[in-house]
Amino acid sequence: MSWLHTLFGADSSARDPRTDGGTAGVTVDPVADQVSLDVTVDAAALSGDDAPAVRDDLRAAHAEHLDAVVAGEADTDASELATEYATAGVGTAGFTTAYGGTVDELVTAAFDMVRDGEVEAAEEALRRGLDATLSDVVSGLSTYDEMADRDAEYADALLTIEAVLEAIPYPVYMLDANNRVIGWNYGHTALVGMDREEAIGKTAQESVVKATYSEGARKLTLADKVIEAPYRAHEEYDVEKVATPYSDHHVYKDVSTASTLDDEEIEVEFWAVPMFDDEGTLLGVFEMIDDRTEEVRRKEAMESLVGEVTATLEELGDGSLTARAAFGGQAEVVDDELLDIVGAVNEMAANFQSLVGQVDAQTGDLADSIESAAEAAERIDDQLDEQNVSLREAAEEMDDFSATMEEIAATSNEVATAAEQARSEVQTGIESARDASAATDAVNETSEELMETVSTLSARMDEIEQVVEVIADVADQTNLLALNANIEAARAGEAGSGFGVVADQVKDLADETQSHTDEIADHIERIKAQSRETVSAVEASHQRIEAVDTKVGQTVDAFEEIADAVEAAALDIEEVADANDDQAVRIEEVTSMIHEAREATDRVADTADAVVDETATQQDAVEVLEARVDELSE
Image 1 (cartoon, one colour):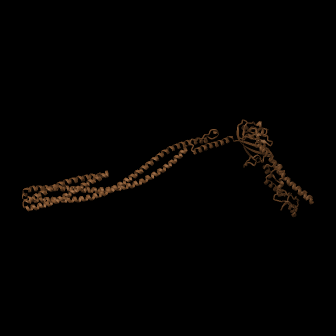
Image 2 (spheres, rainbow, N blue to C red; image 1 turned 45 degrees about the horizontal axis):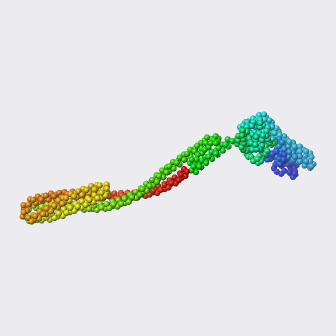
Image 3 (cartoon, rainbow, N blue to C red; image 1 turned 90 degrees about the horizontal axis):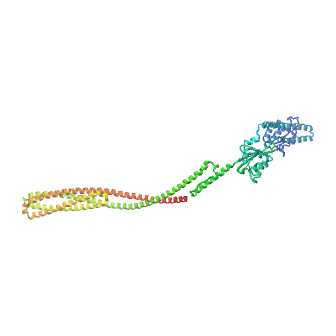
């Protein structure tokens, strides 16, 4: 139930003029027999045209407090509110103004009660409401007094403006609300070249502008602009308003190029802060200057350095290998480590130029080497083709020679067979000769036996003559075989040298056999002549029987020699046949090796063709590389 119901009863609710939750009323002690005023005080009543700026949340809290105080629901203690007001920069005038609306509402409510005939009740209610309101005001003002006393105590210990400004390690000056210099530290003197004594009391134009700007270059300092519009300087003069988490005050920032009294050009950054009293009245402006000349020069030098290095690298990238970076004008403001970049870039460029030169020379050598390799590969390819043809011809010749050797082997076998037959026939001749010798012993016994023996001997001589002819034919064939073997051995070269020796031995044996065969033929011819003489002169055979016996003995000896010769010839022929078989095997092996060599040559030829193709590809790549190196070298 509201305090209105307490004072006027339930029907008084129609007279409650409150419109929102921010209302306030007046009451005395909340008892039923006491009279109170029906009054409405809201937050809007605390913010008239004459009231200083107060935060909305603080105004609402104050209205709620007054509502409770007037209703008798809270103690008349505004100390906490007063502290918040003072902290927010609102002075005592601003604090007490907030109660004016409440008093107006109390008086208005009292007059309403008087018009209704409730004079005494109105008087009592007004007195109690005013007492509560004034008590609350007094409690708040007491808090202000306590804070003022505390500030006064602190004031004795506070440093002077000059001491504070001198302690700031930056150029600083202060202007009052009338644009007069009231503070100027040594840092500012060092920056602009004007003493504090000369600047104090003068306007900003007569001091700061005169010391830092040429005639007509700048009309207003940042502090001037802030004095002209302390709350809207950023809107009026296009300067930067800086939001900082460390202060609720307005902070402004600007940059400019200035000069000292010695005409030294400097790059400066300005910071300006307006200062207000407890009533919100502008007291002056604090401005701090940061000389950024070295920083700006360093930045410009860095940009110049980066531009120089970038341009040099671009020239190198475009092929200008003689490009070098040069930097000197502002080197004193750049760190040595950064200046080393110039040397490093130039060293890199020199190394790159040298490397390109080496690559160019090596590329030329490589091109020559590849060209030589290509020519050599082509020659090898041609030689391999020729070698392949030669190997193919050699293989064909070896195939033919192998066939010839097979024929020779077959002939050798036939000769060996014939020799074996000749040996058998010679042995038979020996036996016949021995029989003839026995017959000569019996010639004396009977002529018929002699005639038969002579006839038999003649027949046997015919057979021997045939054998001799066979032996002669074998010797001729052996001689021809040896000749052919020598020819083939000569064709085979070193590989056929051993076979040639054997062929020579076979030829010698054949010649010797031929010689003995001729001799045997002569003997046979004589024996036949003698046989004919024996037949025609059988009567005289007795006288010549001893000679015949001697001749028969010689014939036996000759046959034995022939047998030995035929045996040796047979053995040699067998050796020739064996050697021929071995040679045929070796020829087969050589032929196989030649075929393998031809296949290997084919593979090598294929590889050589691939080498030629790859060499051509490398030659093209080297030509492209030479062109690119030439582009870099131009």
